[in-house]
Length: 311
Length: 175
Image (cartoon, rainbow over all chains, first blue to last red; front, side):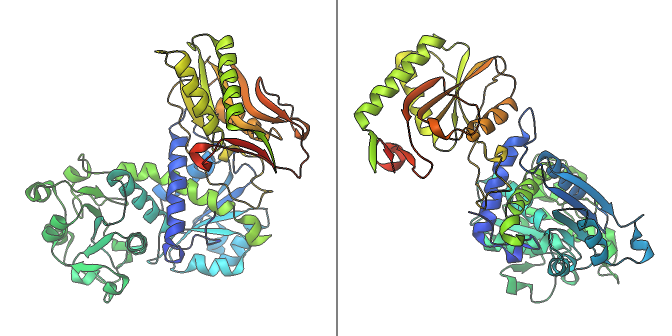
């Protein structure tokens, strides 16, 4: 049994069986992370480069930790301070790194499709750690893992994605994953932040935060991505918070238990109030913890494909 | 295909192995059983329940160990192994650990098992119990302490231990 893909470019390419295998393997790694020695030797002869062309805290640390827990050797590359500023192209940069016997590439890039482009030109397994406004597959996997852990499964669960659906790669990956695994999905936000025709992906659109909260088992609140908005799409952060922000008062008035998730970093007081982010319904820090186990599963299962894919 | 053990013979051998463990470990106050995933578990389940019947009231710590992430053939084998559950909910620090697997062949699984075990602590000692020892196929210096039966076989042959829980009958066959 193994994955149907050579690279993890997006959830779009995965089958439900792939997702299931990834989540089950992550269960095993979560168990490893609870042991006195939180490390296994399986990737001890694998070298992995983390290429970050865009800022990151959680994802970068999480991948690096996952690699170390698998005993892989790691190299960290950030675009700032590298020869990228001298004009070196993406392919040249990666080819040079790979010539030093590197087996896998974890890449984050601000251009959508950058890892797909790289996959066509280089001879190594690629893990997409977020590409522009396209996909962030490991985030969707860790979100799914966390929902499954909290609610016992994904099938038939009602998940609402709130906020900036337009610019969110987390939203797109979550939509692909949740619909493939039989969950129901509503996207909710201001009309300017919800792409047209998104219903074609099998989700329902709502503009009413209260009604959506009343419907859902899980609220995954996404970050407002001001850095990706070329022109203003809502009047002010204060107004956004007033109409689309989630606070304790609103949650209490609904009177049912909703699991609160956020991929981070949180704009506290904008999309999510601190009283909700820090409440017992929030599994935000569990998401971060599960991220390491999920990324270990991704790296392990892709490294295992090395021979048949490139041999 | 040749039958090496029928159900009746197998039961006698399991009884003997359980008694040998009792002989060495008494009331199991400082000994623990650890079965090796995936197929060693059927044997360790049987041994554990036989010991419980022989020592009414005693608590015999029993865990399961998966060695998938400790294998030494990750880069040479084309087959990707899917891990099974590891469940050791007690400390092995200073304990006499009895590792249990169905067939001892090259010794590589037990080598990986020892590595995996040491990540849970420093046991006082480790012993190995196997049902079948294919003695001429060893690639590492590993020998059993408790043994059901020695089988002389060549590499092209296969020894398969069948269990009622999984395979509808208890039998050991040489294929």
